[in-house]
Image 1 (cartoon, chains in turn purple, cyan):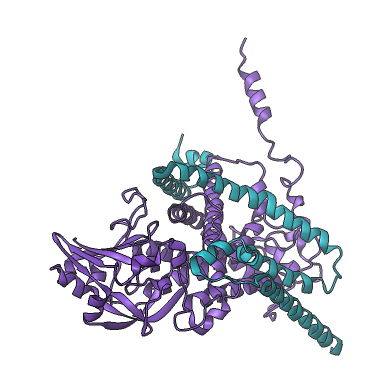
Image 2: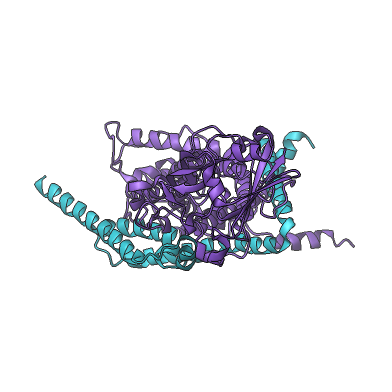
Length: 466
Length: 148
């Protein structure tokens, strides 16, 4: 007597019946918004397909600019893992706003795309409750990558958006989390685009075909009900021109449009317009804090829109008060700058530094948080300090150590930056003595490096052969 | 079994399989990177899962339900002129709520030295302006259709 068929039939009985979804969201009729359609999803997808690569590439560029392979720049992160690649030395000699531009684009576009991401997720939510939950091995793998895609997108956008608003609600290290999370998102996104691009393209084409079929003279304001033609032939309003047979095989009903939509209370045009308006306002917020100057007022809903008055009122990343240091450690009588290269060490007072040749450059501080500020900095060139201790500027990196301990209490710039004429140990800003909040007695300032690498309250600089 | 049959059983093509495997391999590499900080990894996994569950199973149903419940109370023709500014306003709030509600204010003050107030008022003024603009559009539209 064989138990085979019995066991098999029992296992089969446990299998979800593809034709009988459980009640609730697993039934297509549960989703009633007339706005959901493959065409809406395709349009939002196209916007993201254009915008997200810029956000991803500028994010990777920022990691490169931090030069995590040098000194303590990696902040404790290992730099030899499979994804810890940085492709080239960060270039010097370019415009000083290069990093501010790249990071401004990263944050501004990230802010502007968030409403689009949320709308895109809303448009595809019926897919989360597909029935049967798994159709084939391919479907299972795709759903797994989609979990990384959705999780990665939400994780990256939310951590980034919280971080620029100083709400540190997370217990993990932001830089590392945003970097590896970014890779998960990028990987899942590439797979998603590879798999879905033909569907998106076909649905964008059917949109045009549907508009044309609805009324060849109609340049705008197509009857929204007609949008459903491509996906559900029964939805053609009786008074409309019958749509031709859909010539695009990909654009079949794919579980997004509702089979029994509610009467329309908002057109797709208004939905997209509203999302665009929210994106536009957020875009201007990003532009305001990134471009700065008079435009900073645009960022009235972000912390970095706020300013202090006067020539020294430009933004501060870390205040003197926060360091907890005593005023006496930077007093003229006690403070000395230790400059080291190999065996040679020189101690310099602030007076001695002021006696060296002074140079002034207009340089931009670009913060990883997407805000920036451009000021006139005056001080001693790094090449002169290197030569003072017998180092060849084109062959050494420089590590600046701050009196203030903690993250970014030390930062290393590469030889490209050391040999850049504009890299200064600044003593003055806008012709005034550097204030405590901006790094008195001396701070590092260099073209196109991440703002936190412009170390403040420096007590020691060390040149190392590379 | 022929190759064609295998792909048929698999339910996709070689391109799909390759792209998916590449994506999962990158995810695995990122997770390996994270194991350098085991404590971080745990918190990050919690965040990844919480992000999906909160968005898909809490926030989305809540705002969908709110939309559906309120829609019945809205006047039929004017409804869209209320929903559009409400949508814009909520999308903005979803992005800048830490600043508007002051969640980041303490850290922001410590780091920047600035104590800024009035974000709630600014947000409400912006929201009011959006509704006002929408109301204006409604009035103009009504007038235009009357003239016709």
